Length: 187
Image (cartoon, rainbow, N blue to C red; front, side, top):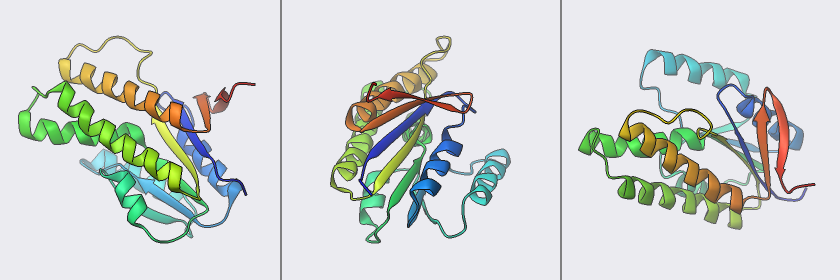
């Protein structure tokens, strides 16, 4: 099996995670599922449990809300497929770290530096890995302009992180209503 890197991008409930899991099942072999979500409230805890139950029991799970590339790289096991779900929450986690220190008045430049560092570490992993890597992220730039400064910072930083990943991967699919539309490479 040829190693490749895939980015799945789309709106909320567009089928990204389901498609990522479907691709990983099709590819087979040893699968590492990297989860960036944190159960900060009861509703999120329930969502995480539903996601866990949807995955095959023989898949390995790595919970890494931050330092994702380093955490994956530190795992010495060999995997055929790595599923990273999701970049959206990773960026949120970095932003929340800044908000814990500065409240609503975060410095966009510092947030973006930390996010770029995270993404560059993931890209470094992609370049060195012999695994097929499937990453999930949300497209958040097609909606209305958020009213709050922090929300605008989040949208902008995530958009730039998505661009970095899209340039670095072999394939990009836009998910629309559960249907993957290939964006890269173009046919």
